[in-house]
Length: 274
Image (cartoon, rainbow, N blue to C red; front, side, top):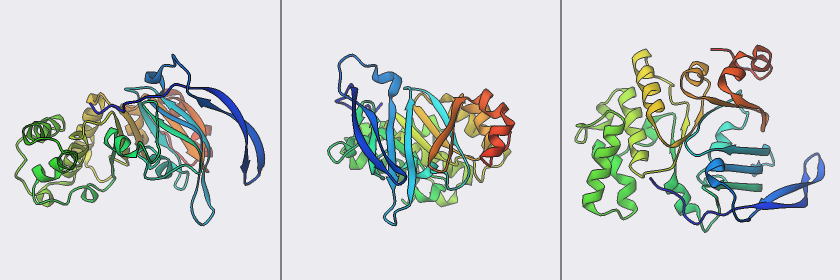
């Protein structure tokens, strides 16, 4: 598994910070010995992000996700879910605040390691499948990491086995069903041996059988998993913790059973109980 080396531990310090609605002081955690990185494998600290047009999409996100935990990230369209997800592998960079994976701050020096450690699986599998064969697609990432040929083949076989697609190496990706393409897209990420998997609407377009198969696959994964979705039944079936976002903020965070049972909370934020 692709861990991020060189983890940093943290203590607190405070400094002033300006928002669109004023300024305030707040604390930031900085390196300190003995902190448990495993409990904060994903760590977002007072994360703000503004687009070039000045729109503030994230307005002070604080979130810790333990190693191996599976969480659902839910909220109405425009809540900031996709913007947050793209911070986890360094595609987006914080306007203010910090993102840490395995204790390593996402920055220019670490971004190559971070992108190997954090695998993004897009809603449309065709965004990740562009090679002549399934083998070539799944091998693409490790090949460009410089993995030797013998290990490369082993990684491809292991990744395809993990998603139930063994024996498909020579198939043409565009001849596969949507459910099969979604599984191969996940295999392209698993072959990098990431410690974190981030999914964007993974159940979209799946028929009932494909959806059941994906839920079983999701449950079997050992990585830290973040799933952005509108599929509340998926959250109930496979994700023990739910984080609700709205208007660039986390408005609720807790056990999925509690969040999904709070009809008033769901209604306030444009969500429906499963």
